[in-house]
Image (cartoon, rainbow, N blue to C red):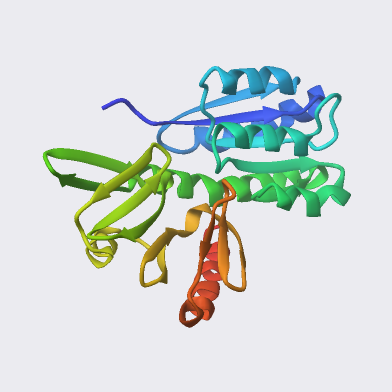
Length: 242
């Protein structure tokens, strides 16, 4: 089996800062088992062109203030290619922090603290990326089989006598109950929103009183009876994983 490569893109128009971030990332990965790749970019257009051509990155380190598109605009462009990018801002411009979290940034790190904070961020994020990459839902129905990685698994809902799984690659329907599917899902990524829907917490970017919002903008309703339990579970997951 081909070895999984953890790919990191670093975008900063400042040569010195770009090299500093790159060296910290390379030092972190060099001390771990597994394959990795770190790419440095000074121009956002080149990074976005690579994404448009199908290049995949697990992790993005972005500056905020840059010529042309700023880091917030770049994040929105990245989200066009896949809905759940892992973005860390490394910047001198702390005033942008609230806006950064609007584009689902996982960390916002001042450049003056990068030597201490970047390894901490990598230590929290990379193991989660690896866990999600390895774990998967496997099923066979009607002579067809499917394997859906947890990181690609959005939610599953009751659809008549079937269950409909919505994932990055599309929709998969099988004649199983939600309870059967939930019993097969491992770990603490999944929770019931109501008796007819299970969601992967990994893809939730925010929640309101009666709904959760996924990274691609999809909204899912939460039953009145489940609201407090859903809120508590999401907050616990966020605190423990990022």
